[in-house]
Image (cartoon, rainbow over the protein chains, first blue to last red):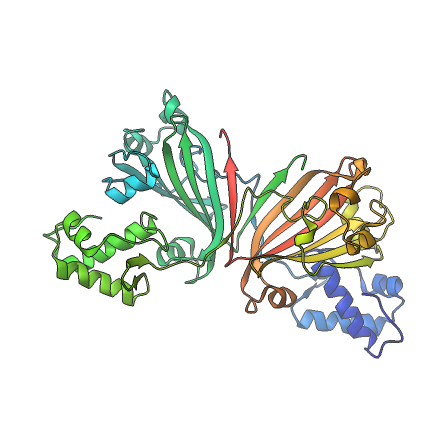
Length: 246
Length: 246
C-alpha cells in the first residue's frame, strides 16, 4: 500500500489503511510507539491535519492508544507468559525439576479399571495396576496459567503419592528407577473450549478457549510411565519453538 | 470415584459422575464406543434400569451419542487435521518442500520502508532492500486450515516473485544461495482472535480463536532471511510434538 495522490480515496483514509497494514505485518508491534505525527508527515509527504485525522480514527477504533506526554502506541495485546523451548513433556510430572514451585498439588490413588489399564497398554498384554492421579497448577507472578493432570502406574512408582505429599524431590523419587524413567514423549497440542472444572481453576469464562497439551511418556522398559494433560490459558500463554538447521 | 451403595446419592447419578470422569480422563475417548449396558451392569454390579437411566441422561446432555444398531459412543470432538512433528519453520516459505500443493499463492513486492527494514535487522546496521510478500493457504481434503504470510528480502532472492509465479520448485529457487539458506528458526505459538481478513479466508466467524505461529528465520550469513506468520484454524488443527530422551 502506497499513498496515491490521484486516488479518489481521501489521503487520511489511505494513511489509515497503510498504518493498519504495518501493524498487521508487525512492523509496528503491539505496545510499541509508532512514529510521531511529524515523522509520518515527513516520510509520506502528508499534511499534519491528514495525519492527525487518520490517527484520531484509529484511536477511536481501539487500534492505537495515545499515552499522554509519551506518544501514540499500538494497542497492547495481553502480556503473555512465555514458555521457552516447548517440549512434549513440558508439563509432565516425572520430568518436572522444581516441585516446590507447585502450589496445590493434589494426589489420589485410582483403582485400575479395565479402561484405564487399556489406556496404558495400547493393545499389548494388560498390566493390572492402580494409578496415581496427580493434579497441580502452574503459576507465574501469582497468575495461574496452567492446570496439569498426570496419571502414573503405581507398580512403577509405589511410593509416588506419599513421596509427593512429603515434599520429596522428583530427582530422589525417580532415583534407582532406571527402567521406568521416561525416554520418549509423544504430545499433541490443540485448542478446545474449557470444561467447567477447568474454567473454575483457571479463572476463565465458561467455554473460553484453552490450549491443551496431551502427552504420553514411554519408559526405557517400553511401557507407558505417564499420561499427562496440561490445560493452558490461551489468552495468557505463548509457546516458544526453536529449530536448528532446517 | 466408586459406586457407593450407602451413599444418599442415587446409583444412576453416581454412575453418571463415574462415566464423565472416565471421559475426562480419556479412558473413553471422543468418538469411541463405551461398554454396553450389560458390560457396565456386570462391571459395577448395577441393575439394567440404573445403567439405562445414567446413559439416557448423558445422551440428553450431549455427552454420549447413541448410534442405532451400533452402540453408545462418546460425542465426537471435531475431527482434526494432524500436523506431525511441529517445527518452528513448519509454515515458512523457504523451507517448504511442496509448492505445487499450494493453491492461491499470492506474491507482491513491497518497497522496504524504514520500519520493515528495522524488523529484519533487529538493531544492526539497516539494509535497504525491498521485500517479497508471499501469502498462501494450506488445505487438506478441500478444507483450508492455514493462512500463511511470509516476507523475504529481495536482495537475497531477487527472482523469488517471478520464480514462484512460474511455478519453479523451492529447491531450484534456493540452489546456489548457500549463504541465504535458513539455518535457525525462532518461533512463537499463541492463540488470539481472528482478524477480519483471516476470518474471511479461513471461513471462521468473526473473533473466533486462531492459533498463530510467528517465526523468524536466520540465514547462514547471520541475517534474517524470512519472517513468516501462519494463522491456523484452532477448531481444526492439532499439532504433534515429539521428544526423545527427556
